[in-house]
Image (cartoon, rainbow, N blue to C red; front, side, top):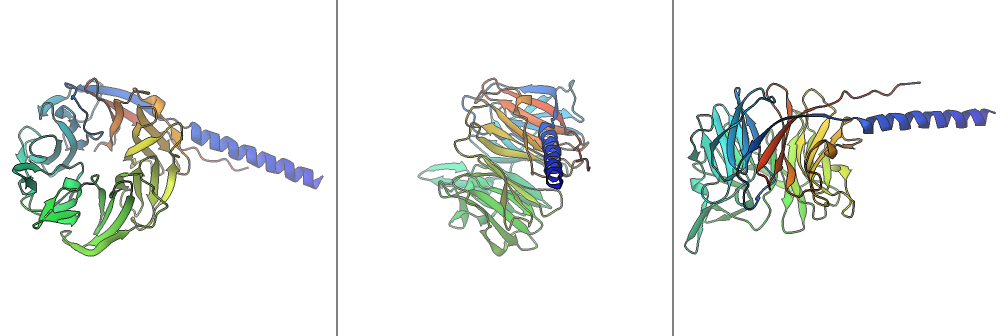
Length: 379
């Protein structure tokens, strides 16, 4: 009799656990369309990054058709205006103390800045011009970060830092030629700065993924301790797409091809919190992450599904223990021209996702609302 009751109680506990697990997995985002930024579609989409940046008054959009601007807060009646770089892909934007910085993907200058909210622009990459066999070009980049009065960028597949607004650059990671930065035959590394620690990830040489961490001097211009490989599971050839810190904590997330990794020690070691096998029906490139400040246990990740096409969106409300695929909430499923290109929290707390359609030349903006996490009921 006692054994029977024990079995019944065990079954009851399992049913409660299963019910709660189903409730966690059933949690859904609420996604509200805001507006669309339209531009002539590029002949070739060069990147799945665009970028959003915010001042006190404006939101700036980086698109395959240049830079656009709109007033904050954003709503369905928002009407963005085009500012600069028509028919040019803008793959990164950052704003600091009245200055907007941009990364351009195309011919000509790669790094520029504006001090009048995006109306006029000045190059800051004159020291990043590389010449060979009578041909000169500026090193291309895909990530730019601002820390204090320092500018960090991954131009030419390196990680560089400038303390003088781009007049000169120090090579922290990568290659040099006669003391100047030189383009590498590797993917652009992803990086993040946590205090004086610099975290770097990528794939170099081809099919060899890596995550490294080192310590910079207090001025952030040179190494105090050269970067070493972080402790990780086998990364295969899964290129690192981003590295992002959660608030002011030592928790760091790294998005890679088909997986998300988490570090609890500021990048010294990582473990998988989400992992897709290479032969899985869905194989997302996880290229962006959103860590809402008002939802400390929520994580939103986005990118594109390489297996089937279309934007990828997934959510965890328990710090990555469980995940719910939310891709069906976004348009473009099954179309390889569609992808998530930005996920950000605005200064007034809006959570926004940008989804790009390369064929149509359109950037669709959505506001998302994270559901409150349900608590387990104790019996």
